[in-house]
Amino acid sequence: MPTLYTMPGTCSLSPNIAVAWLDAPVDVHTMAYGDHKKDAYLAINKKGKVPALRFEDGDVLTEAAAILAWLGAEHGSEGYGRNTVLGRKEAEALSYMTSEVHAAYGGHFGPQNFAETDAAIEEVKRKTYEKLDGHYKRLNDTLRENGGEWYLGKRSFADTFLYVLTRWIDQTPLSYDDYSALKQHMSRMQADPGVQIALSRQNMEPIG
Ligand SMILES: N[C@@H](CCC(=O)N[C@@H](CS)C(=O)NCC(=O)O)C(=O)O
Image (cartoon, rainbow, N blue to C red; front, top):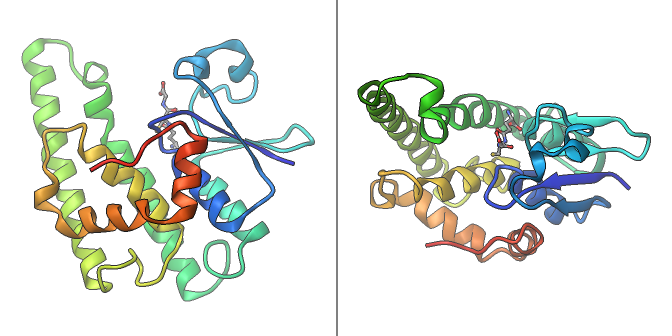
């Protein structure tokens, strides 16, 4: 069976939850932090990032949205990977969450990659949190407009990535109090048995 490579605290939790929801025949392999830069893993994914999905024939798929698309197409019954309204909306939501919101975290996790002096680094951080606040407000509003329970009004893989992004709010100066729909969504996700399986497979705990 294919192997999904994950690491605690990372966005690989999203496909890990999808594997649990689908009860898909995928082996979840959780590495210790730091192993993603070691030769053994770089031979699997030379980007040195998680997630990665290695198939039995040795082929490797990276990028969370692509892995979710494969999981949906191969093991799902509706939604992502299919030409349905939900499938199309999931593709849109996951592209936004991975390429815009996750990418905006670059200025939080590595501000020194964008500036050199201490003052400039502080400015990068300030602008990053402004930008993230805009993204979280948009995510919070969309969730609320769609009824507040699931991001697209019905449970989908978009909820798995939204949960990852919501968990990360805790690591920034932003406050959950400003995004109450996201906070409630996080609690709902943490009560879900599939999410609990994925958290434990990834050596992670519920938060909040
Ligand atoms: N665009 C990639 C981003 C993957 C990514 O940045 N993963 C992070 C964890 S959330 C990682 O592996 N970081 C380790 C590092 O950069 O050292 C995706 O959506 O899968």
